[in-house]
Structure formats: C-alpha cells, structure tokens
Image: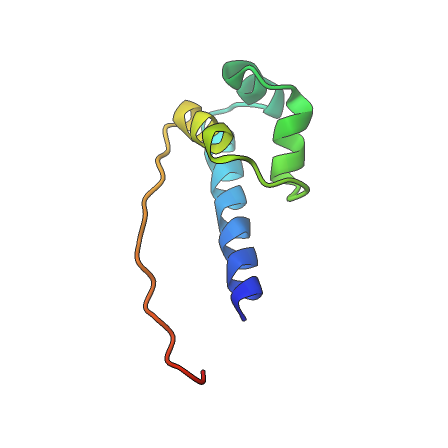
Length: 80
C-alpha cells in the first residue's frame, strides 16, 4: 500500500512541475539552463525515470516559483 501512495505522490509532484513549467512558457531546455543542469536531467525527472536529490528538486522548484510544504499524514491503525 505504501509503495502505491509513494508512487502517487511522485506522480503528483512531477505533474505539478510539468504544469508549472508549461504555464510559465518554459521548455525543458529553458528550465535546465536556469538550473544549470543538462536538459536530459529535466527530461528524465519528468518521465519518472529518476528521482532527484532534495537540493536538485529545491533548485527546480525555486525557478518555477514553487515551494515544498510538509504535511503530517494520519497514522494508519495497527493491523490495517
């Protein structure tokens, strides 16, 4: 169950990055230049091939005007 939730969260994050990049009229190449990354790094992240390190993710989000917000998840009951 946890793997499914984690996969859903990753997919949601990637879609938010892609949507915001499109809203700003940025290509993958444009975003990569802003972040000083190769374009292939953005492409692999958006395709779900790689999971970026936190510092990499923060740099991408910064250039998109996005932030990371932490939220505590409700604890699952024992035996669920």
